[in-house]
Amino acid sequence: MNWDIIEGNWKQIKGQVKQQWGRLTDDHIDMIAGKRDDLSGKIQEAYGVNKDEAEKQIRAFEESRKDYRP
Image 1 (tube, rainbow, N blue to C red):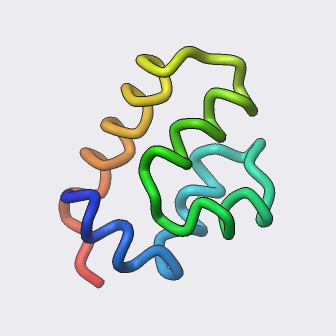
Image 2: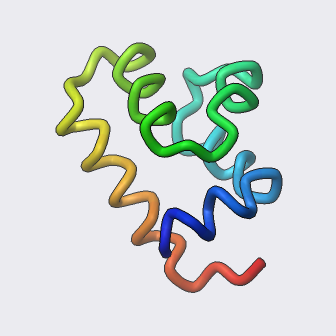
């Protein structure tokens, strides 16, 4: 899935993001508002991983939503 689609449908997808990264609070998810860089930073903070690992997790999340249709 293209990140533009995720960003554009953030309200529908944020529950899936919360399920994937349970340490992120609702406030974090609201602040991220679909911005990939912000999501990456919050994953790094919450899980203590480096940027490459956070990006790897985000790519896996995107891949798992390939068939998503808003």
